[in-house]
Image (cartoon, rainbow, N blue to C red; front, side, top):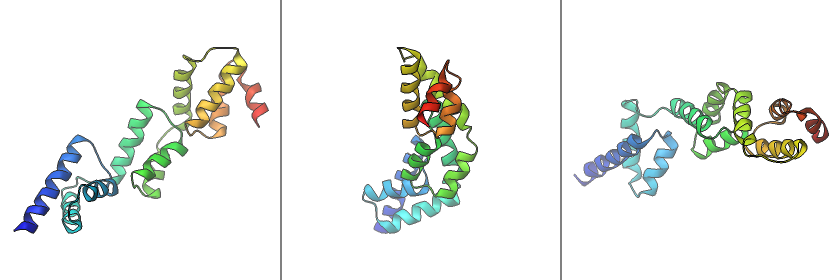
Amino acid sequence: MAEDRDRKNTLDHAMRLLTARDHGRTELETKLQKKGFDPVAVASALERLDQLDLLDDHAFAKNCVTGMARRRPEGKFKTRSRLRQKGLSDEVIEEALAKCDQSELCRNAAERKLRTLKGPPETVRKKLTTFLRNRGFDWETIRDTVELVPGGEDEMDRMG
């Protein structure tokens, strides 16, 4: 009886977490374990959620990438790191990133940042380049984006 109640409580808590937002399997498992639920009850709850098709790491990764791109555009390096922190496999991460246009994300991030940057063009380009690098974009994508900024090509040539 107590075991059934524990399994039901674990499943109920997992459902509440999934109601708030999508979770990957590993992320949900970690949260349930940290909450103190019995490992057997956690495994049972995850199995039941799988049966109900409520856990889908591929859809979760896609939703994460889309959400991150909309809220705060980041490059594939930073996005990959964030998805790994959520416990997603490299295969799932790469599949989600493959559907993401890094050039467009980089341009969007640059356009947002350019509104706040002041100073001579060389300083603006340098700050923009640093900003985009810190956001996880690769050098080629940054160079292509900064070239769109007046005088941007010269700055990237000096950076290598």
